[in-house]
Amino acid sequence: MTPEATQQNELLRFSNAALGYGDFTVLKDIDMHICRGQVVAMMGGSGSGKTTLLRAATGQIFAQKGTIHAFGQNIADTSHSQLQSLRQRMGVLFQQGALFTDLNVFENVAFPLREHTALSEEEITAKVLEKLNDVGLRAAAHLGISEISGGMARRVALARAIVLEPELILYDEPFAGLDPISLGITARLIRDLTNRLNCASILITHDVADSFAIADHIYIVGQGKLLAHGTPQEMRESTDPYIEQFLTGEPDGPIAFNYPETPAFKNWLNKKGRS
Ligand SMILES: Nc1ncnc2c1ncn2[C@@H]1O[C@H](COP(=O)(O)OP(=O)(O)OP(=O)(O)O)[C@@H](O)[C@H]1O
Image 1 (cartoon, rainbow, N blue to C red):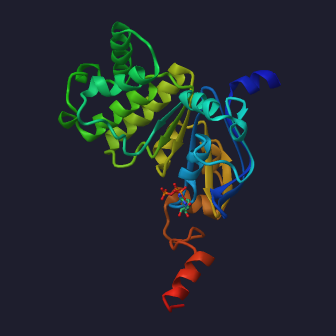
Image 2 (cartoon, rainbow, N blue to C red):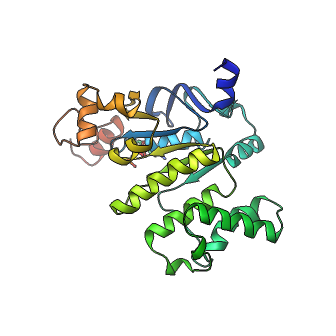
Image 3 (cartoon, rainbow, N blue to C red):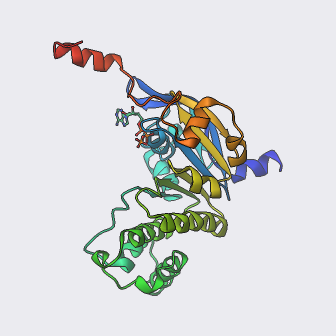
């Protein structure tokens, strides 16, 4: 592929990025990218910075150092309206799908179209039914949110996330709380949608088996940095003790259970008269 073609296909790139909040840096030296047609999984222990990465990708927080490019544009250099249009090219599926309980399944999926497009009622109906069909729920269009199961609600939220046909879809813990069958189906669905829409999908997940089954590339964060990345096969073959512990879920190893003590915590404890 020529460099131009690579650039066109590249939807998101972190270059030597440091990410955090105020003076607190959660992750540094982050280099990663994702291209059209790819499913990428971002993994790491609790509090390692996965959600922080997602916030940086959508421009909710800016890089403390380095750059983040979305669709070829440096997010830090965009105006408010440019950032809004970049975000419209992204679909975000939060862990709590947050459906509107006073709207039925159809209206939940139609909502972004009514908000952001001038499509006719007929076009909206066609598009919503098409997306519900994509997630296997065309015949559930008329149901109320209280009438569907938790797994179905996730799929409705997915249909809503893809209804504007985003080029980049970010999934925050898409498998959390799903039974093994729904989990496998959701994983397959993410892979199929990525192929069919020719978009890119980023999964933030703890689930090794299912994300490894569908991802093209895995990034593992921990200890404030990118620890490793590669294809699922390369990760499985890694002899790095951190990666091995992460993949096998062993309780003993380099991954600490305790949240590390920070100067802010020590100050707080001092004020309580403890040390
Ligand atoms: N708004 C915030 N202000 C300050 N610190 C924050 C904020 N949000 C998160 N953090 C801190 O950033 C670090 C990374 O948090 P983040 O939510 O990105 O982790 P995570 O990998 O998504 O964790 P989990 O898997 O448990 O959801 C944590 O130390 C957390 O306390």
